[in-house]
Image 1: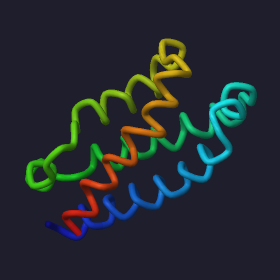
Image 2 (image 1 turned 90 degrees about the vertical axis):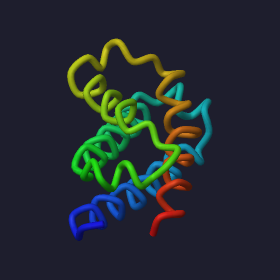
Image 3 (image 1 turned 90 degrees about the horizontal axis):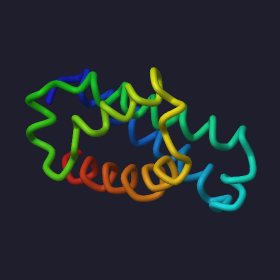
Length: 108
C-alpha cells in the first residue's frame, strides 16, 4: 500500500469518528435538525471522495467494501442531493460507514 492510500484511509477513519459524534445524538435529533442532516451529508461525501483516491490495488486488498457504492453515494450527494432520502443517509451513517471502518482496520 502506498503512502497516499495510507493517508486516505486515515482520512476515512477520522471522518468516520466525526460522523459517529453526529449520529450519537440519535435519529430523532437527525430528523429534526437540517444542520445535522447537512453535516452528515458532507462527511459522507468526504469519505466517498477519500475512497475514490485510494488506488485500485489497495481497494482490491480490502475485502467487504463496496467501493463503487461508496464513490457512487459521494457523486449522488454532490450532484443529485435532492434524490437522497434521509432514511438512506441515516443507514449509511450508522451501518455502512462503521462497516467500512471495520474493514479498513483489518488492513492497517
